[in-house]
Image (cartoon, rainbow, N blue to C red; front, side, top):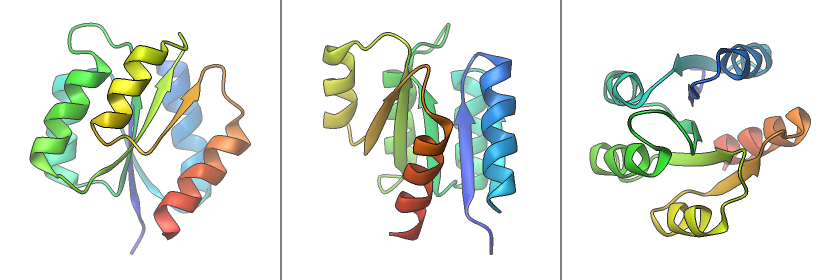
Amino acid sequence: MAKKVLIVDDQLGIRVLLQEVLSQEGYETFAAANGQEALAVAVRERPDLVLLDMKIPGMDGLEILRCIRKADAAAKVIMMTAYGELDLIQEAMELGAIAYFTKPFDIDELRMAVHAQLMS
């Protein structure tokens, strides 16, 4: 059965790019533009991995991460940030994020990180 990846980013271009790349890798992908959508998909689909943008209008990445953790303590989450905010990244790691990427990220590096996490 295909591993499920949830992509949470308010930028359509990034969601489309990541869905395209990860679908080609054989993953089942889901996308969400905001926190409410992300949590609904997370509860319904129980993704194996969540790619989560730090800065999302409304509910930020840390808040979404906390909610995902409550719903599924074992969920694997990789944070994405355009800001390099080390304090937020530090907090995300303390909340259980397994890795982070700074935008613009190298798509191959991200693809390999997703693969490594889903194979472990």
